[in-house]
Image 1: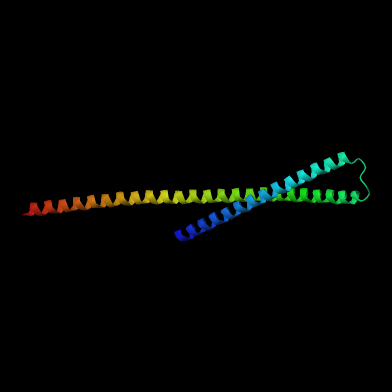
Image 2 (image 1 turned 120 degrees about the horizontal axis):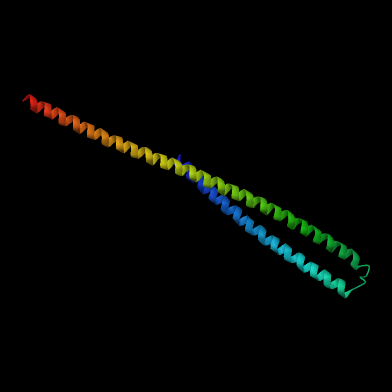
Amino acid sequence: MDERKMVRSESRRAADAEVAEELGSFRSQIDQLQQSISDMQSQQGAQSQSQQQPSQGQQPAQGLQNQLLQQIQQFSGQTQNQLQQTDQQLEQSIQQAIQALNQGLQHVQSNQALNQINQSLGQAEQQLNQMSQQQSQQSQQGQQ
């Protein structure tokens, strides 16, 4: 029974570590995407300042660039949402693990209390046996 709990605990730790690693990877990807967006926006601003009238060939490219920027921003938003959900799930898992540990601690404390009661009962039984032996010895001595 205890081995199962230990295996569950180890598997939860491994899963938590894996989730934390994935979160770190997602965060670095988001940072890179946001940096790319920022770079593209500043390039776009510089281009629009230097060229008041873009040629006809540049307009479709600028439209594609805007569309790409929009898609990157959407992906970044979706990834942020997924990260928040994963953070919440990880927090819930940790809270559940803490609750399980607290319940286990309560069981251990209950077992310790029962052991103390058993020890006290054993001591009382020994004392009663000693008293009984003393009485029987006294009665035997009285008969002699």
